[in-house]
Length: 78
Image (cartoon, rainbow, N blue to C red):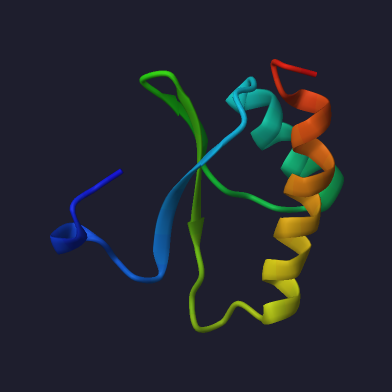
């Protein structure tokens, strides 16, 4: 969603299945203790992931597991 010239390699805005981004953001925080930006851009639901040097592989796995669990339930197509 942006030019490679302006990308920060440790941060990515990633489209996910269409859902209520505020509900997704709240669910990630309340159920999994994960705080990331979730928003709508044009017709896309976007999550912005920032992996820093202090993040562990286990934390990234935790995020993937949380999104894998939540998105099918929250998707507008569910």
